[in-house]
Length: 138
Image (cartoon, rainbow, N blue to C red; front, side, top):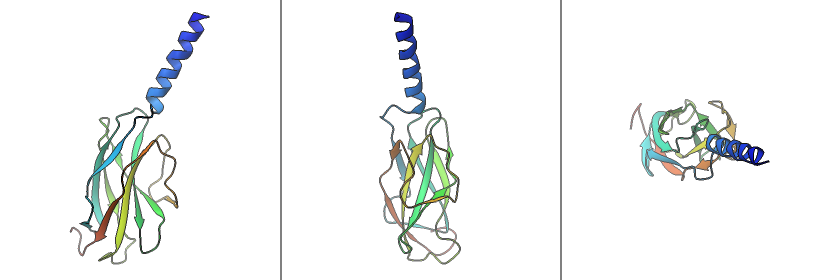
């Protein structure tokens, strides 16, 4: 009986480490609130370095009232991540406002996929509000 309990405890601990323990975090380091962004701008940050968890950047255009658009995001083993995010879809973004969040999840998301609510996640960053600027880089 003790062996069964120890085995169940070990499985619970291992799956807790892989799927998240409830103490996960994700932060956007750049850009910061009120920054200017171009059509393609780098978004980077850090998150909990948990096996099987990926960070994703989501962009929400205020003028269109959404939706959240999943951005291609590279997550490193130390929990740091970066995304060369798209703002707008080819039209001029000058003066347009966007909000950005980052999430960490064990679900696989597809770049370009859209949501009206953030998809299932273990942690979500604070929202960052940015404005579109002229040119390829602000």
